[in-house]
Structure formats: C-alpha cells, structure tokens
Length: 237
Image (cartoon, rainbow, N blue to C red; front, side, top):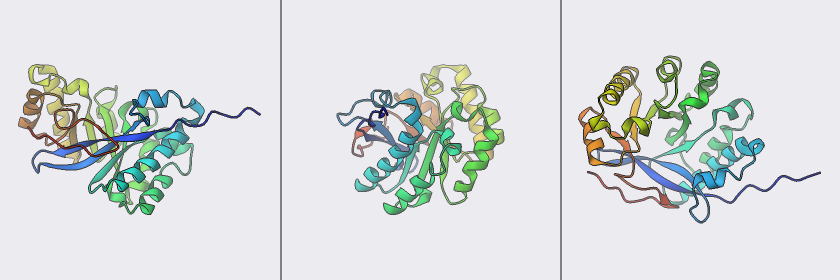
C-alpha cells in the first residue's frame, strides 16, 4: 500500500491587528511559513488535497503552541477552512483543547474564514459555528468584499469581525466608488455590532481616509510586517 508523503515542516509568522485609538495590539494573526520563512503558498502546495483539512487543523494547534510560548497577551487570529466543520468532529474541538492546554482563554481565539469559502451553505455554517461562539469563540470574515455575496452573508450570519479586502483598501483615498462601498459596509456593521478591520493598509493616505471615516482597527505593512516566529514592533502613524 502506497504511503502518503509526510506533511511539510512549517512554523508561523505573526502580524498584529491594532486599535489606533488605544494605540494597542488587540490580536496577532498567525500566518503559516516554512522553517526557512518560506511563504504560505510554498508550504500549502506541498499538502495533498485529501490532507488539507487535517493539515489545517494541525496548523491551528501548532500556532497556539508557538503564540503562547512567545507570551501572547491578546487575541490570536487563526485561519480556518469551514468545510472541515462537517468533515471532522475535531476540527474546532482540537483547537479549543490546544488552547486549554496552553492556558489561552477561548475568548481570545478568533477563527478567520474567507467570504467565498462559506457562500455555498451559509445557514449550515452559522448553525455549526454558533455552538462554539456560545463558548466565547470569535469569528472573523476575511477578504470581505472580494466575493459575490458579502451583504447577503451578513444578513444570514453576523460574525464578530470583518476584514475589508485589500482591493477595497488600496488607494481608497482617491477612489470614490470604493469609498462609497466602505462607508456603506461600515454603516451596516455598526448597526449589526460587527467590528471592521482595514486589512492590507500600506500608506498613510489610505490610513488617514479610513481613520477619518471612523475605522479604528487596522492591519498592514504601515503598522508592522509579519515577524517570523516573533511579535514585531508596531509603528503608529
């Protein structure tokens, strides 16, 4: 019987999400890397499709172990493939068990899923994930605005956070249509009690426009690059 190839070696870099009003880091996103700081793409392309969900589960556990070893004192954002909810009974429980072993409170874990990944069955996803949210787990929709049913998704499922897709953020200070979209999304999220994070912010002009519109949570190179196996210093404009 042919044996499958072993999973590639991997580790993590961490990039902060900051609250500019309080000038503090509210969370670190764990970004998968190779042992030599290779990109996530270089690592994930080595994982066979049939093992991707298992690898995804394994990665969250290792991210929690490394983050707590580094002394994390805020939230931890972890990427999550929602299909694993109905393919594995341990997809989230293993994450929560790892957090318990590492003395990381459930309330400090934020699972990130991309908008496009849960379009297929929003109702089922909401039903399955809300059980864990009742325990304190938080959920963020990543790359919001990159898919086709963002507002419909918010009508069916209200996450704790959304992260504006960088295609909306890039050059927003001089792009009227993007400005209108971000204002509308911001109003909807404000009404629903959802935090908005501007992701991929690289310039002070982007930051200034967004901050003037009331955005207070940011992630991007303007504040800090991802740091390999460490928490980077943060620059506040």
